[in-house]
Length: 296
Image 1 (cartoon, one colour):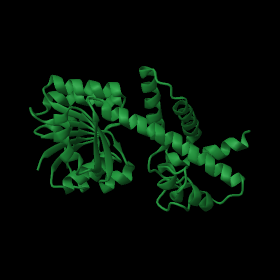
Image 2 (cartoon, helix red, strand yellow):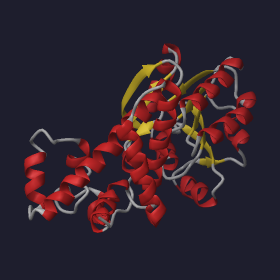
Image 3 (cartoon, helix red, strand yellow):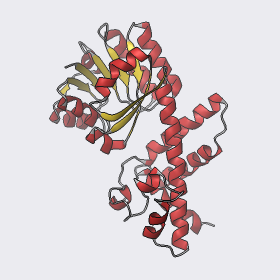
Image 4 (cartoon, one colour):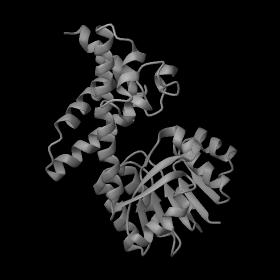
């Protein structure tokens, strides 16, 4: 079993670290938030006094941080303290440029590294059913896979450095766009006198079928586990969806790609967040769609 340094013990990182403990690994963790540290401690994580202290003597280091600037700063701080031969895994969702900068820091120190953002939300983190989208060398991916398998059920090698982040950004652009489309369909159905269940029963087995409909339906009833049945508590918060859509648009501009629907989805979620709903699950966008009809 490995000794793992884990930095970032929040809503996602905390359960992920707990699953590594359950798998028999020794996990030393750090987070700036006291409540996160206490929750992780209760799950068997040994709490370190700092990020540097967490990585000392570790065979593997995992980071789960809010944004690219945090990944760059933390890796700049910890890489010189990481043991020779150790593996670094970043599970944050960040811009591709920051991911590649982190890989460069690791390579300069002679360390293997993988960018491995996740899909599956808090539920997936708790249940160890996350999907990991990985970027890095074949050697680094092979070393990371046994660790990631303790936190997820699908581990995909997407390509070289930064490819995991590229896959995550593209995937979540699809998700944001499709949730708006499903929400517009249900809002229209309501105006036409069609029940939620009737539309679900048709579209869930017809050409309109998609994950946003069948697993995360934005109206109460058809999918009992969806946040719509729990007051739109996340789940995956609107603020996080907006972050990912903004990353997709930054990447599109840098790459010279045209993503008009992605751009429009970003604008719609930005308006929803500005109205005070950043903490709502992103499927709550249906409420914004309904409100738009009253403003016409």
